[in-house]
Length: 298
Image: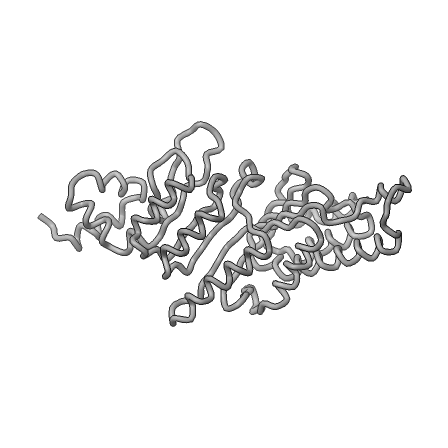
């Protein structure tokens, strides 16, 4: 019979979902699969299925064999690593909460790579997103782990901004960070904002049109100009550093003076962008479409 090290080499070539089945074969196989760190340092959850078809787990890491990712099954899967997780990917999992992610971080003090991409178009409205304040708290938590001499912690996340105050908060967070070429660091953590969702940014023009607004017209104009400036600056800082998806939802593009500037920023700065969603209507963005978008803003 082969020794454990040779058996581990064999299992290394086996897809993650099949390794889970191998654990049920015998006590020895389970021991090899649960005691070798390379099999328990990466947890990659399969995204929620878009239909009733069986879930195919990724081969880049191990994952619990189940219908869908939920908080309870996530905690069970995390416990299997016995505190040894280094990489955790919960992309496209609509039923995973921030609380569960925090529990995984607490239980795995050496975890320095976290990915929370909201997922495909069909699941993105429900995907896991972070507010600007959550981004700051997460960066602070991960930064402490990088001071032990290990690799620089990295987080790939989806961010959601509701209202111009949160937008200003996100801009301040990004300005306080450091930019090195295609890399953005916040508090010593490499941060990649893969998706940005915005809503309720601008004061509605119709309120002034109907004369029922309590907001002075000059204040209204200044507020929207400040919001446009903040959004353009945010896009400038994250657009060429891994941003793949923009979701402009309710009242994100209803200021006729600001929209051309926003789309100019998208066209000039968002070099890695692949998808643009306007009020839940999504389409794939190609570079040659920018002039068309700018010409149809009015």
